[in-house]
Length: 113
Length: 115
Image (cartoon, rainbow over all chains, first blue to last red; front, side):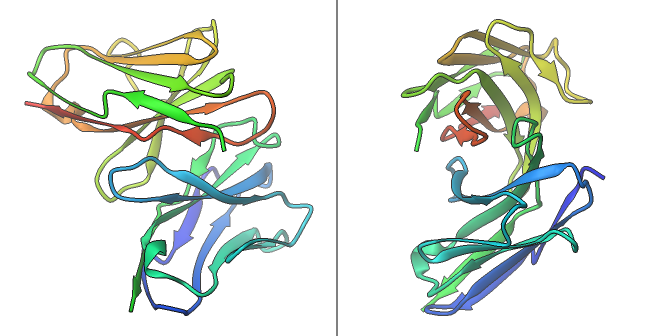
């Protein structure tokens, strides 16, 4: 019940396209859903996060869509650029983020010219 | 965003020796710090959670006598890998969270290679 399932494992998108990564969870106590970006040999960096009281949150080219009834959330990267090539992790936490983060398995995104 | 540093960024040691990794929150007070371990092409695995001035809470399967965590101040936590062995070789990442929100800010990681 603590798992967060992430798909796809890897994704190749053409420059300028839309990258979509999906996550699903079971634990209904989760109420904070961040996305992290990680470059090789570096620590993860927070991209964007959402709480279940909204269905969508947008920051620049990054959008989180959240479906509470389906217990799913996704990251959309618009106008994908080669610099977006990285590994993306979704995560979830309970108690307004005060509990530990449960991470998804990660998606390796490659943007090709 | 808030900044977390780690030192060293990489370390090579001989089997049987101990290694200490420092994690510092540079511009905020991290009341809670977390230590993760990451193997190549895998997700982050939480090892332990520590609150300033308290004993760390270890995840199931993590040996607390092998991975010693100290969170002596609001800006510093240390992870000591005692009697390191080759299987302890990994990427160790810390994160800090302040009282002001739910966000965990991650350090740049420390790569440990045990020969």
